Amino acid sequence: MKEGNEGFVRADQIDLKSLDEQLQRHLSRAWTMEKKKKDQQEDQQQQHHHHQMQISTRQDWEIDPSKLIIKTVLARGTFGTVHRGVYDGQDIAVKLLDWGEESHRTEAEIASLRAAFTQEVAVWHKLDHPNVTKFIGATMGTSELNIQTDTGHVDMPRNVCCVVVEYLPGGALKSFLIKNRRRKLAFKVVIQLALDLARGLSYLHSKKIVHRDVKTENMLLDKTRTVKIADFGVARVEASNPNDMTGETGTLGYMAPEVLNGNPYNRKCDVYSFGICLWEIYCCDMPYPDLSFSEVTSAVVRQNLRPEIPRCCPSSLANVMKRCWDANPDKRPEMDEAVSMLEAIDTSRGGGMIPVDQPQGCFCFRSYRGP
Image (cartoon, rainbow, N blue to C red):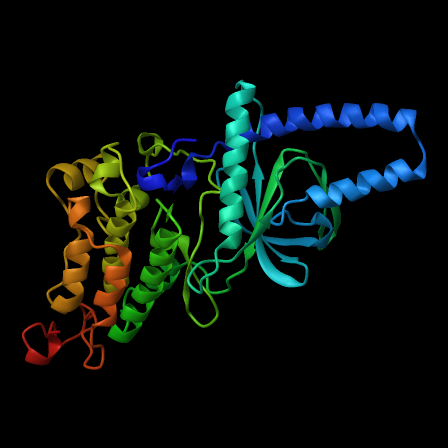
């Protein structure tokens, strides 16, 4: 498992598919051994002992499939489906990941991938922050799952992995911004959303985690409209190499120049993406809506293209955006510094984005508009 700068783990580099192959092999070996043993000693004690062993080896993040009820589909992705459900009495979202058919890898490669997956899941399981979606647990896709649905029981094939996280009823931050595209958000709300996101990222960085896919689609809202960072790549069997990602201009618009360039990067790539999200929260608009994939890439890297900050944006906020999306990663602030800069902004006098179609036009030149 290659690590990024300073021992940061790259969530998107875990190869779930090959992990599964190894588990599959490991399990079928264990199963044949178990069968032989059972044939030799069919007595109750042996059975009881085996059951005890099974219980003791379960990881603290492994879910108990018998407590899981799967309901409606919330989303379909390239790697599987996200459903709404209940686990042990609480509302959850569950990702069913189908790791697909086998390819060939050495035992050693697979062993290290398996270790990496386990390590990451163990890390997420311990994360505890109000602005980070609570990761409840996962199954490794190592046994036949018998899962309850609203209509009855479904047997899942062996290579389906379940990732269970808390369910957030407010949907994606992106959808919320799109809903407010015409009327825009009050300045207080802008700063509140931005602070939630900044604090969540700051926390992840303090735990040596680089998210690497910070964008408003990956941020969810709870019922009180608190932002929570979601999607940490356990569920990502999509391209981990930016060159393989085509078409999706949305995601590209958030990617730092060093990432687009395929250069080494560290947690500062999240700071860049945060800067773009900040612009998006203020403007309730999409960065670079009319540029194609290749145009965004070359313009961001070569012409230093960035979203245009509206003239009515208070300089205190514009300054945070510009510092975060600096082309030089070393010049970008750490996330905890971004938190302090946002906390220092006075929202009492407004300074929100002005809808284009308001008759009074932009009030950029009124003195009280400033910071």
